[in-house]
Length: 154
Image (cartoon, rainbow, N blue to C red):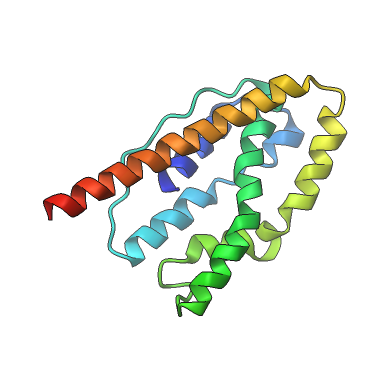
């Protein structure tokens, strides 16, 4: 997730977005995940590069992936709490992503999508979101392969 967040944050930072969509940038996610990695004694993977985002529609489609992930983070956070993991035990990202202002972004985000892109080409928006999901999948697959290699060589 750290590699994905770093790549998404960098792509959003480099994207030419209107002020409205630039305001959705949230560069803290990778920092939260880095904090979690330090807490559990893991080094981050090398940064991954997300394809360039061209304009508001692609930026919004990419944000759809991480903003929607906050919904899943609520479930994961509840599981982490049941296992006794507090905010300082490698769950900083889950706490911040799922709770408070950050955890309440999804309804506002969906309203912004509806307001700005209801007349847009749905196939183009889906293609941009699918590209962000593919990037996430590539990051997660790399992490899984790295973990498997580290486990078998240890």
